[in-house]
Length: 293
Image (cartoon, rainbow, N blue to C red; front, side, top):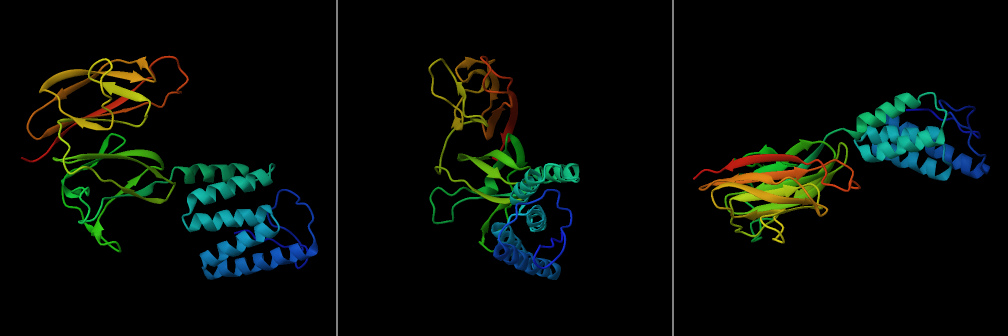
């Protein structure tokens, strides 16, 4: 926390790196009063009240030290996306800040803080609810949970799967013996996000293809139906599915289909720039999801 001394009541500014434009005395006094009250609440550990008062002070009379304190309280409340924006505002207001490297490092640290993704489905009255205990849960093509018991969580009194994962956009796939669901779910740094998936009660097939990039198409034959985000049936044996990236041909996707209670799963992703006039380099993850008879 940084102590800001306003012109009316106090004499100086701690750690303020840029001079602010003078404002009418009534605004300076109102901002100073709000800042002093915020500092008191901060010292008492009432962070919600402190945040509201710091934000009020900054709205009345913007100041680098005030927005820094806003960011600091947001960080302690684990409102990390908001804290990052406030720290960035502080740096924008103080181009020559002596602590720029320190604040930039803190922003970098906060931006990669894992969050909690909560996987849920409809309740028992919903025909399209999914049996989470029977499901493989995959996030961006990685198996995060295999079939097994799922606890009923308070306060919603429903089965939920809690996953600690990196912030950003993610593709969540649920594969059960009977059906399949897929959803894109985003997560803020240090945040919490509910990802609710539902599906038709029965979707047959021994193969699933998923992807993080919606401009990738997978077909069995030229002009065939796109298979991405689908569960479909393949004859037992090895296959080479056709892959297109923005209409550019890519190397085929090899996939081996099995019978019985096994589902062959493939996930396709690319981090390359989408301006290349060619198929981008694709990262492919594959699994054989084996269910109990």
